Length: 355
Image 1 (tube, helix red, strand yellow):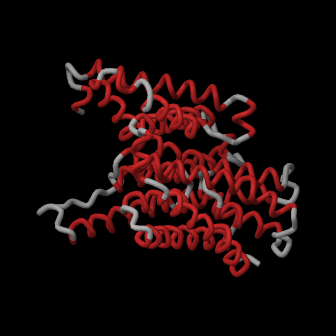
Image 2 (spheres, rainbow, N blue to C red):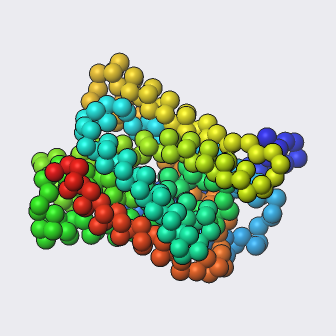
Image 3 (cartoon, helix red, strand yellow):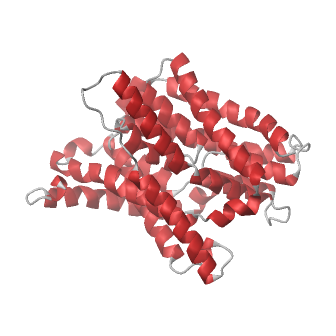
């Protein structure tokens, strides 16, 4: 890699070290009671710290550090997505059954297609619409990060997509328990409420927060089933990225951007699937009920979260307020439209499929 060639190595390491320091700060802040009450993960705090740096100190630091920062948004990001597979097993799919899998598949496909369509109506550039739709459809910020190497969009567009997804996902985390307590979901069974929550909320943290608010002790099975349903959505990230790579390559060929176009195969997506299969095998060999009980799982999850936080922080460091101003309100209108589909459309879809 050119970034680590002799002469560039020291500067690249300086950039990576800067992002690592911000990431440590994000971990510390995420552990504070107030941040925990808001379910703000280190990833989200990391991108906020990165944006704070981009709009304050960025112009006072050497440009030679930039390759190290960009390294975090590419290689470290892809490694983090692969390691994310250690949180999942195929056993989780079997545990909730076909209705949850079918519900997740429909939500993912319709959300992405609807988001791209709505983006065209709003005259938003394709990359922003696709990134926002993917984040809303699958697993929030992690999905946006996963799609970034495939879409190959500018860093500030990724940051905008993450921001919109986080805002509406956080809103859902409070809305769903209110809907449940007010009896608006009373026509659903407990299993249906769990699947509805897991298949329509944005982030894993949002699903966990909403599930625990509705069923603190998991006596009704809402919290656990909602989380597993969400994890099945996360598993769909890999096939979605592969399909996306082929579709985008075909589109670029049609537009005749250049004479030779190669299909960018997201190999890290296959690594993600491979890790899930490996994790399933380890669970069987160790005879444990959950992935949390597997040897070194906690350490791997911590390292993975730190790497994803570095990637998010680096993306934030490439995003200035001016770029948000240039984007305007349209990306938030797009995310809002997708959000209405998830809440309302997801409700009726759950009634049809599960109950």
